[in-house]
Image (tube, rainbow, N blue to C red; front, side, top):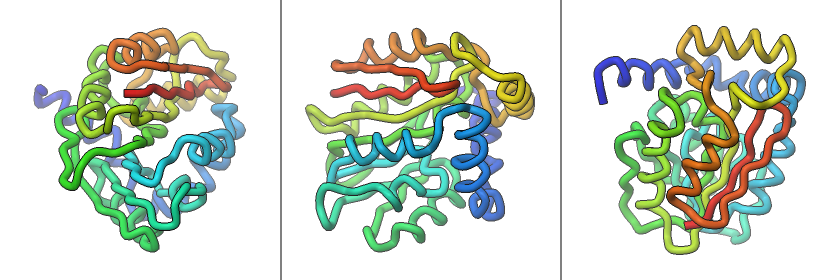
Length: 220
């Protein structure tokens, strides 16, 4: 990756410091998801309850809200956290300390290697729209995810789209601002592009849109 791309990757996650993370649930998952992006966080939590396994890797962990509130199918799941942002990793690890998660600080465009074997589910929520490039370039994340997924494992997640979905004036304005600041990199992201990137690597691919959000799943 070029130096410029490294800077772009860092810009997409640098906004999440200790103060930002303390307000993440109410501002991002509460107000923004419900009123701006038109996809309430309850939709995403329902998908965790449907798809999460007892051997789970979460990539781009945010505040750890979904891992805190979802229903794991076993009492003592193996949970791993992966993010480039050390604040997000520490915040989430503390929040779900009851599961004794392992943490991996990674630039997932380059490396998703872990110790201890593969995973049966991988969550990737609200990450891809912060990653630079189009889905051809972002697809490297899917390549890397495959390497840590067991046969039959499920990848699922959500990302905000910049094309082909209805966007209110507020959504257009906020997306434009975040793209200008480098927090988002999703001007050209579409459901079709996401579908193609997933279908090139996985089977049983589904992509559905709710508001500005694409909800996806794919099986290794």
